[in-house]
Length: 354
Image 1 (cartoon, rainbow, N blue to C red):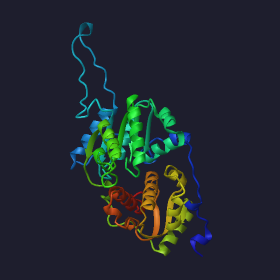
Image 2 (cartoon, rainbow, N blue to C red; image 1 turned 180 degrees about the horizontal axis):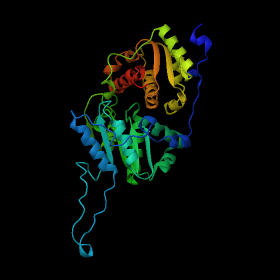
Image 3 (cartoon, rainbow, N blue to C red; image 1 turned 135 degrees about the vertical axis):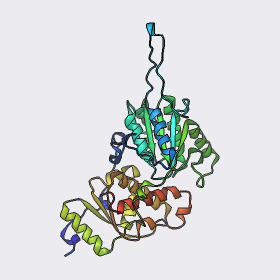
Image 4 (spheres, rainbow, N blue to C red; image 1 turned 60 degrees about the vertical axis):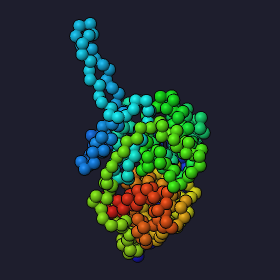
């Protein structure tokens, strides 16, 4: 008798998560993987000086400078030396972390969030646009206004309208005193390259670029330092054994067909993908195959981002998950997004996160 005959496994396709604006605001904190991230726990690669420099610049950006102290009689004399903020411009309210995937940008973003005192928010680009969708633009501004720091992870463009919305939000909130830190695999003046060419869109990109000081972080993908090859694909028998092992351990594993999962993701807003996997300790996907539909591929990328945030292992059969992006996708405008997803899939299907 097989594992699936002796145990009932939950299916992601049976879940219909939704999230309100109020609930979404409450989730605007670093994911559990980075709940304890600090500047001290970020270990720069000594082969790339830009990593240590980025850490030091961000620490200066979010750490208030101590007031000048006066010495001697009647307050005359020496003044305390102020920390050097490097090349960060004091006139720009934002910092933009540009670098390849796996160089620690999200760790530094979360470390900055933890170091900043006062009200602050941390979310992905998708989560902020979803907040506007749930509360309306004025409602979102009202909630975020007055925050000391707003962190935006994965600033990547799927829709020019969303980008124009975000640049407007940044402009309005920086005008009220908020600081911003954003991460992406593409510098702000190059966002949209190979995707959109509308003049209005490019003006929006330039307006955002003018608000940010760009910090470049070089390096290699840390997730792949101990990994080789492609994402692990199991035989059907090995997959059934994995189901049985998880059931015997008392953990919660989901079991879904790849096509059904892709169809289901189209019915759930990406801001609710975290709710889709809530409580799962392992995710099973059967009959994986190449994806040639760009929309389906981008939804799957957003889904894997949330799985990776939660550090949930994946067990899969069929095509290796690092070989699913077909139809020339890896040569298109979303290349870096797909490559980052492949890196994460390789880690999630290995034993490294367990």
